[in-house]
Amino acid sequence: LLIPFLIVFLRHEGGYSLAADVEKIPVELVDKVEADSYWCLSKLLDGLHDHYIESQPGLQRMTFRLQELVDRVDKPLCAHLVEKEHVQFHQFAFRWMNCLLAREVHIHVLIR
Image (cartoon, rainbow, N blue to C red; front, side, top):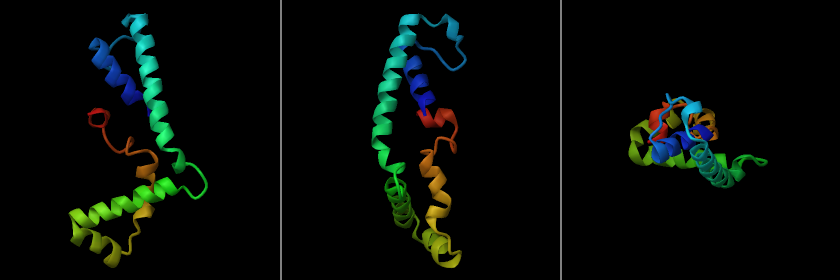
C-alpha cells in the first residue's frame, strides 16, 4: 500500500520515476517523501480499521456497496449473477476489497 504514495511524491517533488536510481535521489528529498508517504499511509489505515476487527464490518459494507453499484449501473448483470448463477458478491469481492484492488490493477492505473 505504501508504493503508490512513494511514486506519487517522488514524481511530484523531484520528477523521479520508478526507474530512478535510489542512490542518486537527494537525501533531503527522500526524507520528505518518506514523511509524506508515512502520513498518507497512516491516514489510509485509520480509515480501514473496521476492515480488520472481528466480523470485518468495513469489508462487508464495501462488498454490499459494490453489489448496490453493479445493480444500479447494470441491473441485468447483477440479476444474472445473483438470481441465475447464485453468486454472492462477498464470495469474489472480499479479496478485492481486502487489498483495495491494489493487486487487481496495474500500478500506473492505481496511482492515477
